[in-house]
Image (tube, rainbow, N blue to C red):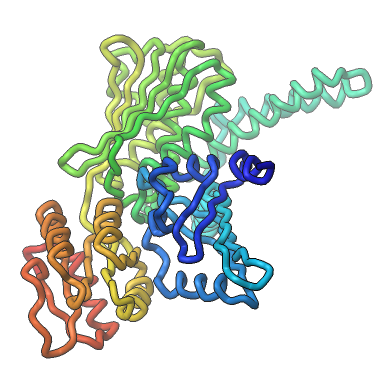
Length: 490
C-alpha cells in the first residue's frame, strides 16, 4: 500500500505496463502531463502518445533493449504528443521488472518533461545565428546622441556614483534598489540597441527570416508562462485562450514571432490597470489564416494615434499617463509591424467597444516555398519503406513523420497538415483510402503518392502518383519539388 501511494502521488510521471506493453496504471503526474484520463490509457499501449517523429526502428531498438534479460533498461529522449496535439519532449526511462526466477512481470517507465529546456536550447541557437549574422555586417552605425541613449547611460552613471560615494554607510535595501535600477536601465539600453539593429536590417533589406513549421499554441503558451511573473508584479490577470481543436501549423520564423508577441503582451501588461485582465486569444478560421488577439482593459489608444503608433520612434505612452520609467523607445511596435508584414500578415490596432486596446495579428496560411518548409508523412504499416524514404526527406530539411496504422495516420494528418503523403500501396485498405480522400478534399494542393512493387496493381484513385520500389533519392526529391510547386504547374 505504501509503495502504491508513493507511485500515485509522485511528482514524476510514471506508468506501468504488462509484458506485452499494455498500460496497467499511470499516476496523476503522468495523466496531467499528457492531458489524459485513466480510462484513456488503461488497456492501451504507449502508441497513444506517439508523435510519429520517431522511426519504427527506434522503437524496435528500445523494445530489444528492455526485453533483453542482460540489459532490461532503456533511456533516451522521445518526442510525444499530448491529447490536445501539442508536442512535448521527454527524457524517458523504461525498466523491466522481473521475478526472482527471471520471468518478466512488466515494465515501469518514467517521463521527465524537458520541452522547456529544448526550447531554450533552440532559442540559444537562434541567438547565436543572429550574432553571427550581425558580426558579418560591414557598415558602422553613426554615433547616436539622442535622448534614448543618453537617458539610460546617465541613469547608470548617476546610480553607480551614488552607490560608490555612499557605500560605507549604505543600507542593504538602498544598495539593492540602486543596483536594480542600474540593471533596468542597462536592459533598456540593450533593447534599444537591438531595436536599432533590427530597424537598420529592415531598412537595408538585410533582415532575414528563417521560416519553419510553427505551432502558435506552443509559442503563445510558452510566452504567457514567461510573462506571468511580470503580470503578477503589476497585479494583472494574464490569460491565454486557444481553440479546443488543434490548429494547423504556420510557416514562420519562431524567434521573430516570439519577438512580436512579447512586445504586444508586454505592452498590454504595462498599460493594464491593477486588478484588470489581459487576454491573448488564438483563433484558426476556416480560411486557413491564424489570428491572435491581444487585449488589455486600460485607457485605450487615442483615436487620432491609431494610425501612427507603428511608426518608428513614435511613442503613445505619454498620452496614456504612464510614468517616465515605464516609457519605451518607440521601436517595438514598428519592428513588430515589419516582422509580421514580412510573414505576409498584418497587425491592426483598435480600441475595444467596452474599453482597452485591442491588437489583432493575422498570419496567412501560405504554401511552402522550399523543401525545408514541407511536412511529409510516410504511411508504412509493414515498416519496410520508412528507413529508405525518411532519410532523403530529412536531408532536404523536410519535417518527416511516420505512421504505421490507420489510427496513427489520421492523427498525424490532423495535427501536421502535411503537403506530401507517401503511402505503402500494399497497406492501402478501405480505411486508409477514406482517410486520404477526406484529407485530400480539405487539402487539394497536397501531393499524394503510392509506393508499390513493379507490376503490382495501380495506385488507389486517391493517389496522384505511383512510384515503384526501390525508390531512389532522386524520386523523393522530385516529389518534394512537386509539393512546393503550385498545383497548376505540376
